[in-house]
Image (cartoon, rainbow, N blue to C red; front, top):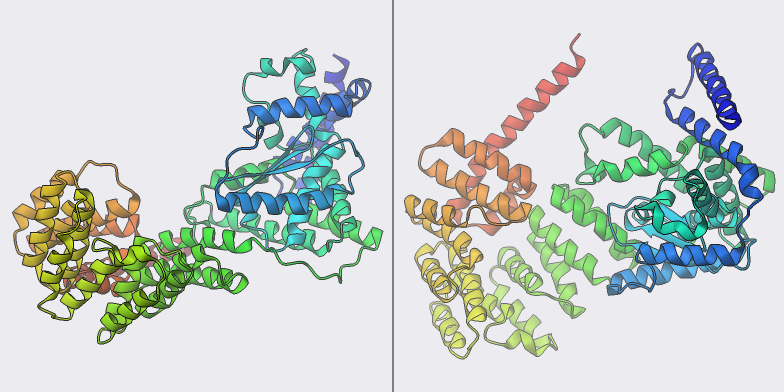
Length: 583
């Protein structure tokens, strides 16, 4: 009862302080967050004495941490993809260097990746288990910044914040350390939620001290906190309509971090005071973040999907400048270049993928299509030369994508023997699925050449081999509508509707409906369908991509629809601006 009275008195004092602040011109908006931290700090102070009398030993804490880590899937160590393994190894290299300077030498620290691009946070479990989200790593620009983050989490363990948080929860339920199972939900949720304000600031101070002792520049922590400060501001400004780097990023990921930490401006000011008080050298250069290309590529792929090709390409070029041998960045650069309509850049990127022997079927397709657009007169010879220099034998197989694309490019250039050579090469292929895929790929080249009858023959044969082939059916809709058989095209489109598709695939189906409606004089419905296509995948607003990816006949209709959609968006934007500034 006495504890509750103390907490209530502190609450009243906090409310009175906020009331006084309201009467002054404050430079920072007053929000409920300071009051929430006041309550958390008050509860912590009230409970500190009894918990200090029952301090858990390092050995006991290690046992508790091991149990929670098992529940969190950290122990035994999970199977990792090669890229996740690279990130985890880097986290441990930096983290262990920083942890050497922690005070509690009995704690054995281990560092893990939460391989979720939307987990924008980090947390530490009792016993030295530290987990960092892939989403948070995307916003780190130097190894010194990472050292500050890991130092912060190490400090939560070293200062006993983590084990104390668990003790508070268990004590409130009158449970002992052996009763973790009685908490119901995984105990790890306690540590994701953050700590009291004074604990977070203490972890900032001590964690930076550990990082500086390990040889890292204190500027890393300042740079990161300045970025978080801007992120908070941008988040508040664009929460209603995410743009740019926030596109397709669930705001819940950012909310969790902001809710569980004090305002970045306050943390920055405290760190600046701490650096000055300790005389830490701010002239020490920061170290490069060696795995940054991974996260730059993550962001670039997201921006590519959202239609911000300029920013996507910029990040990918930055990633490649750091690591020219990072194949995934070259692959993403090829894809973003093609979607933006830059065929020449597509060839450059995909040629590098081939040289690094990391090319997938999609990479070979983009390389061939980029060559056909950017250098039509020499495309066949250039692809032949690339194939001759490529050491992989799989590309010369009759059903391989490079071999098919070579025949397709010849067909596009008017070589009458290309179709016959393609059929002859397929005669030795026994796998039905491989034959069907090969015919779909050849059909695309025939469709691009403005030869829908030849494309239809290939697609019908593919569907006879694999009646449930969605790619063949989707291709066939484009072909049938070019042939003027709108009823057949609509029936084919209806046959694939209702399936499970990605946003990009759904967008293509909507674009096909738009072309069908336009060609049957249902113009208003066509505009609505195209609007849906452009919303789900902005690539449909890229005129150059439309011309490079579709037959001349279909591209003409799609570009008319794009012009209407551009005008509609401009008009809507003007209305929004007018409404914003109207009295």
